[in-house]
Image (tube, rainbow, N blue to C red; front, top):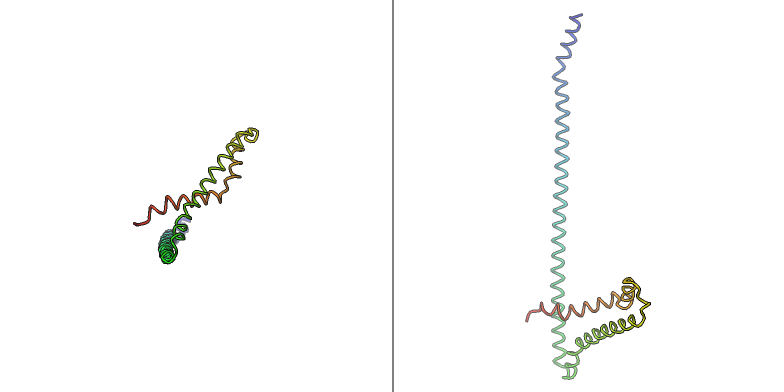
Length: 167
């Protein structure tokens, strides 16, 4: 009986290196697979960052081209105005010079008049405004987003863009 166990043990022990090699190969393959997955993830992240950087560079170039085109269009418009005004009579030149300021004055005076009228109207009808929500609702009706966009454009023109121009 002992010889049978020793023979069987000898067979098993002789196969032990192959069994250990099998488990070692499995562990090596698992490790290599994990490294390959990490490497692929890193490459994907690098590509994504590279594409994001590339996309950002394209956005910057597009913005620069748009600004350059806008500046060229502004210069061309000023040059055209100069050519036209050289041949125009003096009263036309004076009139053209007053158009933008007059539009600004009219628009700002209109806003002041609407504010004064709204304050008077709300003051004489206290039942209209029972809460801050009512006041906000009334002002939203009178001052639309389009009107505020026009006012912002006018203020930006007079107080913003002119300060950046070279003299």
